[in-house]
Length: 387
Image (cartoon, rainbow, N blue to C red; front, side):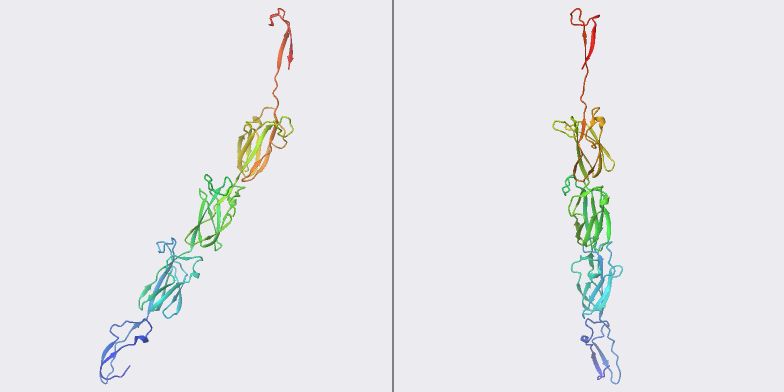
């Protein structure tokens, strides 16, 4: 209230004494000229001001890492956002179930900063320049900030394959191993198991950070041996938004067995110089999985077979030897050997004493009465067996 002489009087609110950013809401009320009447009280128009504004924003999971909240990309709930207003006063708001937040602040420059410690470990900002961000809050208005996209997961891939030659490299023709389980332990110590596909490949999505990959070797063929040193188990650093390839895991599960079948002429159980191998002899191989195969000795009496690692039975099919052949190498047939994956295992040579073929000679001694060189009717003789 003020006492003034009668007459036109100007009323002007000193807006420097209002909160920064205050905005007049009563149009025409300031400044205002009123006619003061002597002895009377004259009311001026009330002056309304607003000094606060509203700011809003969203924090979301940018799954495809493109910096845009696409359809299906969900907001991240429970994320703290620190708001520092024009007066340097801080407040913290938390995103709702949809990843949205809102705050009321004085008009003026306002800093918005997502508290990334409240995001999943390893989360990476995908919306460049959106955090921290300064916006000007306008008194009486709602100001939208830039949405904050984050990606916290990465993808890891790998292959499990049959390293037939045991050289630690997946060469042309070496096939992947399907149906093998791979146990993935992420940075939060959460396990998941993935299974190799028809090509031996696998993939997994995990949070960013150190991740352990461990092939479950119980799901490989018995006796399988790792050929790629250091590849299993393996720890890799997964980067949010990226695909990280692990070291391929090569395994060899087969071994080779060899042997010889020979003619032990002197019956001493040793293949001496000059004692030849026996060609065309069948050898029946029964592997650790009870699967049979038959191989045949070559021109030198040698044979070879590829089988899974493990106990393997070798049995010469003696019906394919010459009748009367006798084994001279005690314990060599049948024989059980332990086949080692990736190695060649020599079995005991099988010596057989093969009988020498004999024939029968016969003839007739007769009285050649007429001296014509032919045993004619009536010419008697004495038959004698000669050998």
